[in-house]
Length: 98
Image (cartoon, rainbow, N blue to C red; front, side, top):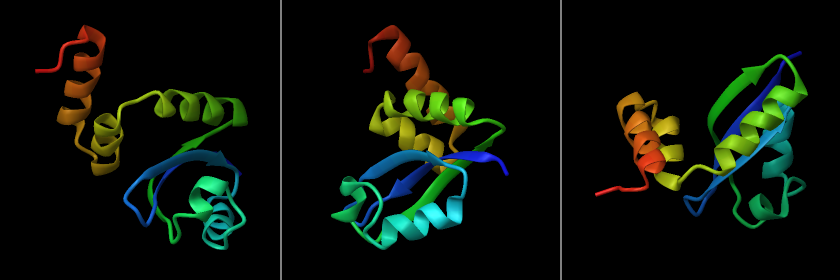
């Protein structure tokens, strides 16, 4: 069974990033109020994006990477907007977003 890095959209519109081996079970856990304390206070949550990985180490590395991204870049990923995703990546590397 593959591991997954996932992004949840919380009821307040915020995003939560995590990883798991069982995506359906983890989503149910979050919505039951037994997941992270962050999502417990922001239920219901909905799966906005997920990516499969062969190992836990790969999923954790991706989770760490995504948590460092700006909200705009995360939203571009969730929307599947590769143009905006690349624009935000270039903007961060140049440190100048006009």
